[in-house]
Length: 65
Image (tube, rainbow, N blue to C red; front, side, top):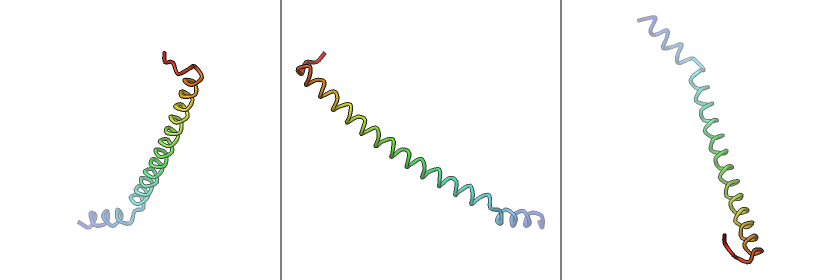
C-alpha cells in the first residue's frame, strides 16, 4: 500500500501531464489559425479567378464554350 501511495504522489508531482496539455492547447490554436488563413486565402483566390473569368468573358464577347 505504501508503494502505491508513493507512486500516486510521484504521479501528481510529475510535470509530464500539464506539459502535454499545454502542447495540445498550443497545437489546437495553431490548427485553428492555419484553417482560418487557408479559408481566407481560398476565398480571395476564388474571387480573383471569378474576376478573371468575367473579364475574359467580356473580352470574348460574352460567348460561352
